[in-house]
Length: 314
Length: 303
Image (cartoon, rainbow over all chains, first blue to last red; front, side, top):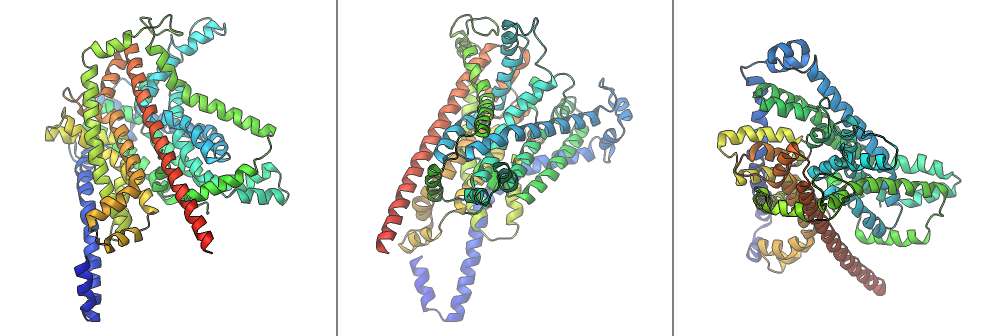
């Protein structure tokens, strides 16, 4: 480096400027070189495989849109595949998936908002301590947590046994393999994804604004509704969209906790692939991806992804 | 102090805010009591299922029974003795370590380029790199499955680690990028002015400063791989059965408390990792705040 700079100092001004420009371009090339390994890797083991899989929705078994027809005409889908699921089953699966994702989003918001609000109102040290309780489940595998809910909700499970022991129930109630179990498990798993962005945004709200409003005569409820709530909306948007997108793609939890009727898109895709309906499985994957992508674009428009995920680190 | 940059808040500022806040704590009202009751219930809902698994794993009952009639280590013995469990654990550890090394190296280099570089298509590449976070797992899984079926990588632990690296990269990129955004580049210029070459500058100046981000990214990468199930379901074959895959297989057959034993081990592991990360973070924060206060006092004394 030192030899380069001394050379530059001796060169005439125009040549010097040209050299700076060249160095700057060289600098950009260095960055491209730094980026290249990760980019090539990601294209090889993510971009290409996913793109190749998605094109199968148009190319398998023959070129055309035949794989999307079952989604439009439920009746013909039955004839084509001879499946034993009832009429317009595919549309129903999409409906169920959207419904589950939506309900889970609403409940994580309702449960997560007070927690984030309370944590943001205490000192950071105390909040970090309480945040450990949010992060422990966050760091525990989804499989383990789904299993825990199986232990809790099962026919011989802890909740049933407790209800019988206390005389509330005479016989065990069907809790596992119901829609309620899917909601309970998914809300549990996705709640940290709501609390973390909410908390990050709420922590950044200037508390002096609230005090100012109070000093100017606003009632506590008005301070919350007219000052705090609007300022926390970016966090609400980030959390909701994050939970909704993740919820759309859920597989493990509904497969373990849900019943026969609680089939989500991911499960349907897996089922189609294992039945070797590759083209149709790929078509379902494409529709699911487009749904997630539409929401993702909305999400990145509203807020940088980086900020939300960056703030979610322990 | 604007609401738009909560994550980038400088730490010392936060400490100062907390000092003023402590003085003006709001009075305990009925609504606050209610709020904390709600918070307690929600936090209990979050934590209770995680800790209910441990007593089940120490049960002496043959089947799931609660409260356990007695205590025993039979399920842990099962974990150690029944075929498949221990090998699956080692496969998982191996895959997770390869994933962590690959993702952290590739991701840190890419973050440097994405945050510092000014080349065309930077934003598009950035979006592409973080997109595995939101693309549903099943889509990546079947894509990889078709690809590996052709490339003969099904059942290969290395193949699984490559797929996991793609899934883990976004965590490294977002975490390292976040620390790089608050980085004072003049420190690097100073180092290079003093005769350090690029590698020395990176090794001795840049890396120590962004280490929390790199460390967090590596932790995320490890956990992402170690807990990953959906891709493993499709491509682990019989040669790369990971622990989650093994758990899934046995969960589909019966709810055997052996899984409770495995789960308890996994939970203990993640709690231990989390707590040590938190302790590290607190320590580095204390050091940073202390230096900041010292600098401020020095500045004040000069004025």
